[in-house]
Length: 120
Image 1 (tube, rainbow, N blue to C red):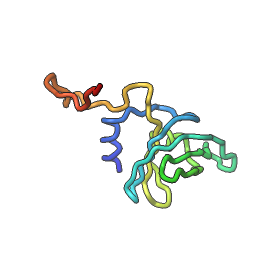
Image 2: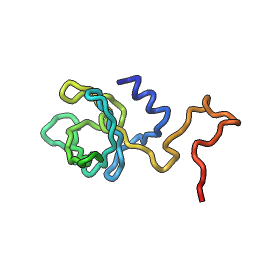
Image 3: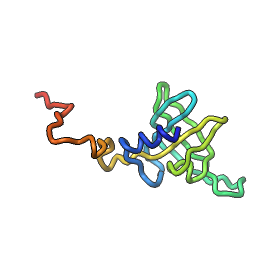
């Protein structure tokens, strides 16, 4: 899982924080999957001594699924890989304000042909 996250960080720009309205990338170890989810809500879990949050997510799948996960801040901001049901998970907000897909600098060359072309 750690290697997958390191590779993702090379091609996806993640935000250091997560707020209501953000799109997060959710990565699961088993079954191996990646999905986007919309953050719909945060509510403090006062029953726990440490700082835990009920994080409302709308998973953008077919069909869409509403879930609420109880996570610590480090877990829903991409600072920590965590487990749910014994399986590793990673959640981080994607930074769509900047260019999200960034080719690694060592792969960019002057004579690289564009992969998209404009059709009129």
